[in-house]
Image 1 (cartoon, rainbow, N blue to C red):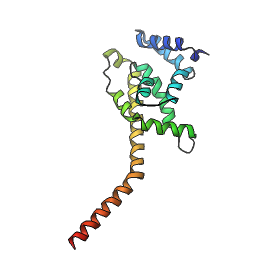
Image 2: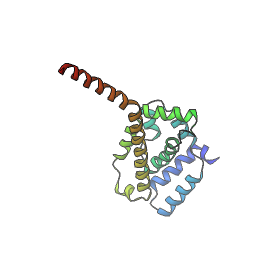
Image 3: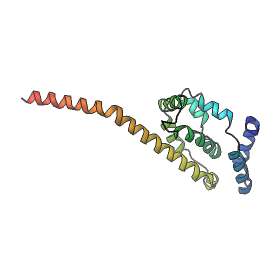
Image 4: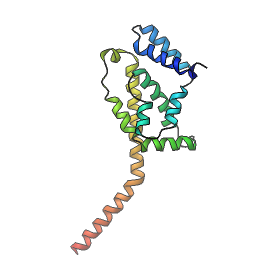
Length: 168
């Protein structure tokens, strides 16, 4: 299978990064999208251990590589909780624990050349990156609301009661 050959995958990404011909770029991207996901990238994401392994998997060095990795990440993060396997739920937890949201935000700050910004894939990459960040922030907010807010309200209520007792 073509996607199992990492040299071929590297060659395809190099063609995308260095091609001056938009037709060739479109053809190579279409070919890449028809292949199964890169086993190397899947293994890298599946074996997420810490921030550096996340930065290695999605390094932001290339618009095409970043978009490709973000599409896989999107599949992981968008899995519904009721449909998600134990493995995916554990992976999501590891992603949040190792500052996945921070790394996604850092990817938005990478300076791109004017050539890179003119490639039609750039807006797609930024749109997906922003959707993932939105998903991360909404998810974090709902977790915060469900876990921390009741404790915060209880603490505030206790402090109010203490102040009330002091005044009386």
